[in-house]
Amino acid sequence: MLNVHDILETIRMIQDECLDIRTITMGISLLDCIDSDIDKACGKVYDKITRSAENLVRTGEDIEKEYGVPIINKRISVTPIAMISASCDSSPVKFAVAMEKAADACGVNLIGGYSALVQKGFSAGDERLIRSIPEALASTSRVCSSVNIGSTKTGINLDACKMMGRIIKECAELTSNNQCFGAAKLVVFCNAVDDNPFMAGAFHGVGEPDCIINVGVSGPGVVRSALTKYPDADIAQISDVIKKTSYKITRVGQLVGVQASERLGVPFGIVDLSLAPTPAVGDSVAHILEEIGLEKCGAFGTTAALALLNDAVKKGGVMACSRIGGLSGAFIPVSEDAGMIEAAECGALRIEKLEAMTAVCSVGLDMIVIPGDTHEDIISGIIADEAAIGMVNTKTTAVRIIPAIGKKEGDVLDWGGLFGRSPVMPVNNYLPSKFINRGGQIPAPLHSLKN
Image (cartoon, rainbow, N blue to C red; front, side, top):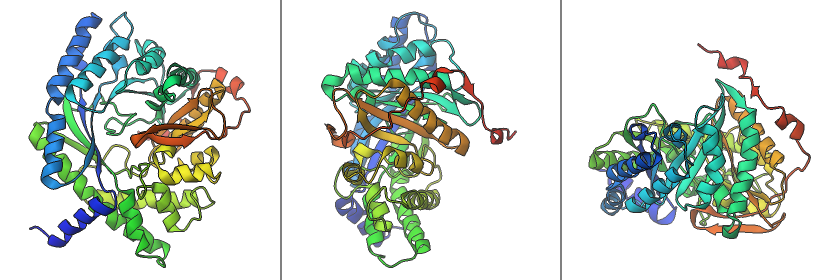
């Protein structure tokens, strides 16, 4: 039975509080495209993607018009390309080109899955793909890449940490004439999930169906607006308000996911509950934390407030949707959040505080710009620290960090759109080189032995 109040409330959230569906992402398995002839394999990849996703954008637009719900992005994720390219001797960059052409043909804005899973070591094709990432991201505009270097079950591949410090630096260097954008399309994970709809880290896990639809919701502005109505509430009441608001936001995501699944004739996968901010005014996770009671995001108490927010979002969302997955919580990407940008610019928010926050948020150190002359081993150390937080806490953590080539602390990189802008943040320049260069595998924690 239709509830007029609910309908009007949803309209208000869309018009005044920046509610949107951040993305519908079609996951596509490419396992049936494997071929020792790389040109044949790339042809199969292009055909499979364009055949599966040919109606994705149009379907999203039809749902937008019918229900009045903005769907900001339509995206594709594919099986980690390191698996598909393993039997080929040529450069995997050809697969990135095929992915780019397919994304362009389908009309999606981003395609993820130029990825490798090396948490316990390198298998055939992994190192070759990882070394090709800078060229692949520099020569494409829509292709996104990720590498999983650790997990709670396996520990952390320190050799991969070392390698990724250099790869991130190369990505920035090869795209220095484009605001170092290549590095913004690369994520390094610990405990990566198979059904993440968000970029740049999305890939289609090998245990997923042949094709599936996953939805990522948004709505920081809606949560903040709800909290403004309770200026004197105690913290338990604040949690309850966030839960109820998250429930309403997630209902919209469930509706869009089910509709897209039925119209495209593919299974509905999950709704990712993550509050995904944008640089737009009124759409900030940092401003939610400040509404809870912080003078500025980054002040002492920020980690506790974020833990409260993340927990309440999950509790509210799971009641509204039959299938929850992905990352689900709250994102803290500096360049993509107006409040985070403000806090970083005034010095209230620093990388060390962001690292502490990642212990309780959805992902990790996200869209952080650092000086271009930062040593690659420092980047590797940042990756290792973040992976350790994920490994020990049995959660997904990630690093998406951009060395601003030719720029120093206080300068700005500006990509516009959803990627936003960020000041160059200061970095602790004491080197972890001896530790990083020891190589090998950091053992899994004792609590990984749960079987």
